[in-house]
Length: 78
Figure 1: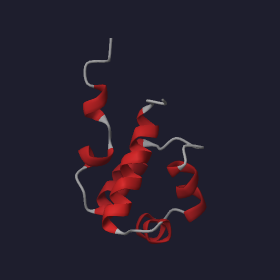
Figure 2 (figure 1 turned 30 degrees about the horizontal axis):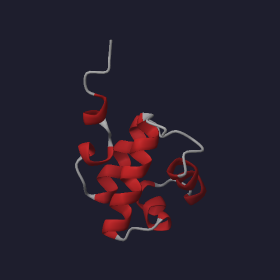
Figure 3 (figure 1 turned 135 degrees about the horizontal axis):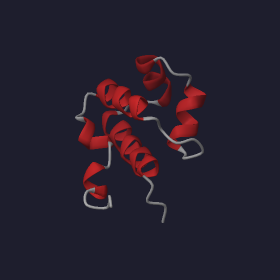
Figure 4 (figure 1 turned 90 degrees about the vertical axis):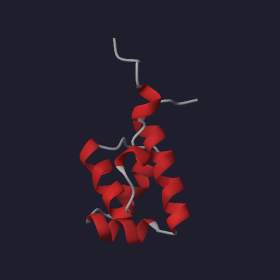
């Protein structure tokens, strides 16, 4: 299983999008990012940048912690 932060963020973002019924097209309009770019992020082909994750959380109306996997990586830093 891929446990990179960007991969976990993608899964969380997809989950929030499903819960809120926000499509990639709507999200792309809200954050001014092409839908094709959002698709590459959500499928893991391209990792998310931190500023993009912040924009997505704001656009979906959820706290950043809901989409950013900080809790899953706490204590892993050496």
